Image 1 (cartoon, helix red, strand yellow):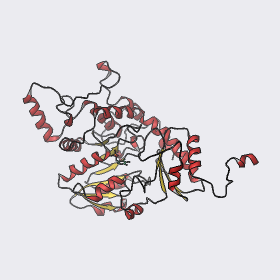
Image 2: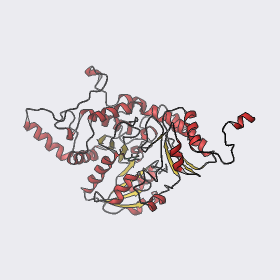
Image 3: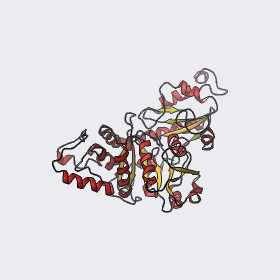
Image 4: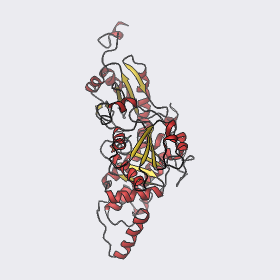
Length: 408
Ligand SMILES: *Cc1c(COP(=O)(O)O)cnc(C)c1O
């Protein structure tokens, strides 16, 4: 359980199919990727380019570049034309995230859901409208697939059923690991193998590239709600897909046509967030592992979910009223979302997974007594004191805490 947390010098991409700069460790990439040109330009902080349009007197050349973009969606960042085709500040974040995930490219969007929508549309425009997916997924991802809002059709299965669920029109297999909110884990190599030639999309929001790089295990698309750990401070909403250049070109064309672009200021904040990502994830994960162990020992807690790969998310089922825990926290923030510097707790059946049909939700292991906690960077003892108070009276314990010590 502590192996991934201890690997401060994470082996650099020995596992990854495309490794553009194979020699630098993750922690180094986190602070340098997407910034390689800055010193040459005499800059330290990356510039924020807020332009929506870019003047050019040569409209024949621009026509040719637009034709080229329409053909393969290649990035236009060196000579931008219009904000919806690409932005240099956002491109820095995309370059950095691709480096961290070990993929050729990454394409950023206005939110995680905009990113997933673009992937589904990109597949549907190829005539591949069928998706095979494994529950649980984040509630709104589940909803987007189940509702068929984008003209897709979903078959839900478990990891072992993926191969049998594939059809000639299957364009995508989608899994989340560790999954939101149960932290269930999927064997990515096994699922990738079962996918054959169908692209596997892994939502890597919970693990982040610090703990898991799905591209090295056979995923062709790695999705993040960058709103969470990548931004890391609860102040930027974004999504990103890391993938090979061919798929990235398709996603850029969808982004251009449908408009779910990321604002340049958000791109700046995300690049800044990436630079502390390894430190934040490792520190929060150590605290989360300790809290998970204490909760597992606690008579007020029926069950604790904590991933074998570690991480900063802990889910647990209480014997008592989960709403009372949400109502009782004082230091911990009672809010949906995750991956911020402060600790957040929420009740998935009421909030993050409310939109999923009740039977589907329960079937995916999201029970009514489950709470999901995103552990931040506070001191572990302060967090435990708050949780301990919010969990209420221990069965059989003296009513006044501390009485025990006073007696003994
Ligand atoms: C939050 C979340 C999403 C959706 O991302 P938004 O940025 O809120 O659109 C997708 N997947 C997971 C695992 C999430 O936690």
